[in-house]
Length: 226
Image 1 (cartoon, rainbow, N blue to C red):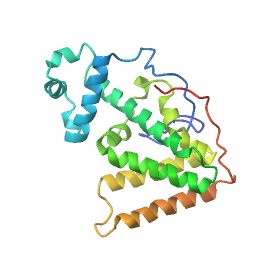
Image 2: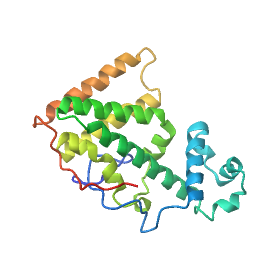
Image 3: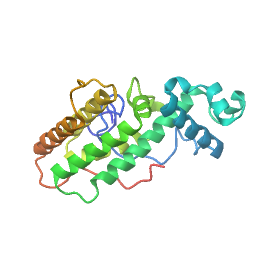
């Protein structure tokens, strides 16, 4: 979401805001077709390793050991560590995008919709902290991602607010809260219930800035993110 109307990270989950655009393409990355079944298995294994052992485990040698194959064989399916990281980021965007779009279904009140959107974002991110870090820390390899995927994943923030700048601010609030919680940066005497109230305060504050009584952000054409 890069510019005001549409890219996730001048905006992405990573660099700026999952705040809204259009799903401009299907599950293609730079015109390349979907990955092979073996490549899918490698990515799935990498995702498990990432959460279980951290980013240090994302090496071809470690993946080969986990899969029971020689590391050089992995290069027949994925070009290397960067390609695996890109595939993981795409998987993360697809999963969180689907969850966030679903979170808005059935809601037409901006307070309730924003509350549910933030709760879903928090739940997804805290459940997969290492994947979340990979997708949101440092420079996003946007040029390698499936076209339109980043925008589609962040579009729910735009749908909830109806304004690209407010959407970006809402995502920034959500990202900041999540990363502070993942990093354990809140004082040890701050209980989960108190953080719940902080999220609730944020939802109420942002919903109060929405001028419409119903959800009204622009929606992209229905597309399958893959």
